Amino acid sequence: MTLFSSSRVFVGFKAKDKASFLRSAADLFVETKAITDSKLFFTKLLEREALMSTGIGKRIAIPHLRDPLVKDFQAIIYLLDSEIDFNSIDSEKVRLVIVFAIPEDIGDRYMRLLSGISRYLRDSGNRREVFSCSDKN
Image (cartoon, rainbow, N blue to C red; front, side, top):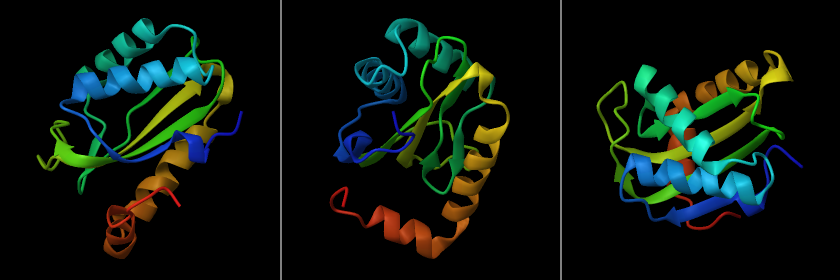
């Protein structure tokens, strides 16, 4: 499957809190066959978040899990209908969340990808454009 797909882009997604949001992302990764165990993936995502929040600031979070249970490198992009608390480094709530399921054997390619996305979203013009999207096209 493709890393990015329009079928895994959600604009106006309703999320009440970080945990329920991550649970729904884990469930979708099962549907897309990136993983086979939603509960275990969710638990490991929470453990990862407990170590250090993936809320990178500027209302953006990039939760990711590199693990043997991941079978296919995939991303889900969510532009939330309202902000949720993600314990971000700047203490701001989050509106854009990009979730990655990363196979363990992928090497460091995913780090370059995360870095590139982070660099792109640091630009205020790029953020403004993303946050103003009204649909996934």
